[in-house]
Image 1 (cartoon, rainbow, N blue to C red):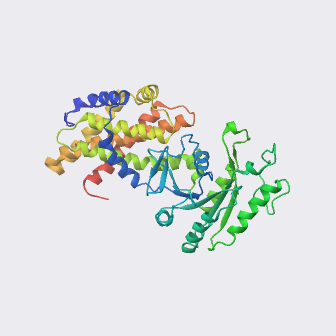
Image 2: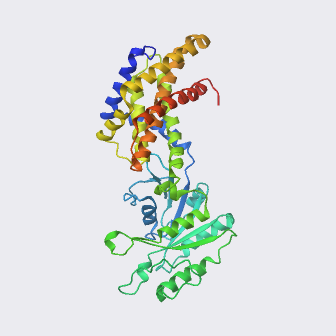
Image 3: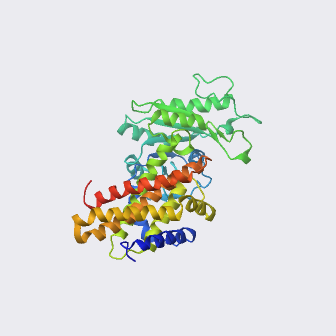
Length: 408
């Protein structure tokens, strides 16, 4: 099926609808392009170290809101002993680097430390406040700070309730940033907190060390709130870094641009893949629409949307098959007129590539508007989404033509 036959534009849209409603995507075929798109995105890495059961997974779960952040579920090995946890998994906006529990028998963390040092943007040491034996953690911190005295360090003290008196509850408001700690803090808890903080005072390095005390529990544990100290944890992370992670993960004001920046890299990656398929002498509309279906699914994941039959039908209805096909056909006609006199026999390949890639790019940008509005419980305007599609079709075509011609 050739792209230089305008009668095939309706067939393209029909194939896309079919693929979206009954997706049969060749995951193996697309994984290489998806991995290349991931590698181009600068994903911030938070390196968490601590002993087993210190609370690293609870921190990841609380920060991401992901109930699936369980040991062995979602983590991917990056060395023999360390693992990455990408969030979201398909299009990560943050990556947690989890080192095996320090102090375990027969575990030498030296190789892992060297690897993690080369990847991390912020070092977070996690210590259960009731565990007085933190020498293994301090040994690693001493090594890292000696090599990187300019690195800031965040130490998170966890499990506060284990030092509460019987029947004790969280102190309101959260008081653990006061110096000295107020008398409202139970005496056993205060001694444990201060003992760990005094030990950290001997660490090398001139960059700041910041302490945060948290108690991140499950609702069924009976402590209210279950994410006690989470706001202070966010404030500490933002104070020690310029990553903007709270907005990136929680959806506060300003998150739109951050999500859109991440989405853009993936839209370009998928559009380039579609352009490669479009450059073939005979374009396989099934393959092109499979790439587009995968892109839209991935963007839905990024924006936390359910990409089911109802949502797909709503999106396609707002886009309007006839309107979108008309945009594509009119744009294609102008492209042929402009390109053929200059490129001769290569016009067909360039046009096919541009059409496939530009349509993918425009669909991705239109879906970002759709998902962002849905995420914030706002109405999606049909005229606006169609205008975005038309504008991005032109922009995507120009970008891809430059790439295909070897321009930066």
